[in-house]
Length: 155
Image (cartoon, rainbow, N blue to C red; front, side, top):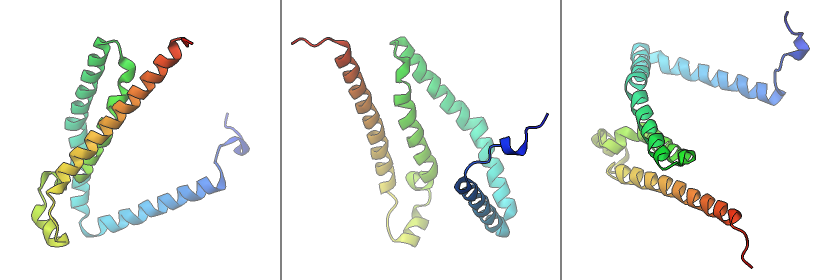
């Protein structure tokens, strides 16, 4: 039995407008992207999917399991998010900026911008340190608050 049309959730008009606009923008970008070298783009997408599924997924799954096991050893499994979030953000930044971080496109980058790409590795490392440091600080603050609420006032 099918539900009546009035029972189908369609969302607000603004939500529908944003959804239609995002599909239109995606279609436009797809048409522009596939115009010149559709085979190269398709090959890149297939290669990226295979690289992710066959190499990257097992790597970050193994790293996550190692973190979870390490924190289980000290009976603090709830701390895993404080390692997962900065690691995921740092990994995403590395993935997006890898050609510049690794120096693979140094010559081309210098020709186009007139600047050196040697600063990208140091900046990525600083951002990664800041992410993990901020996460550690947040964990320390939450642990301090929890300890403060647990002990009775000694007035």
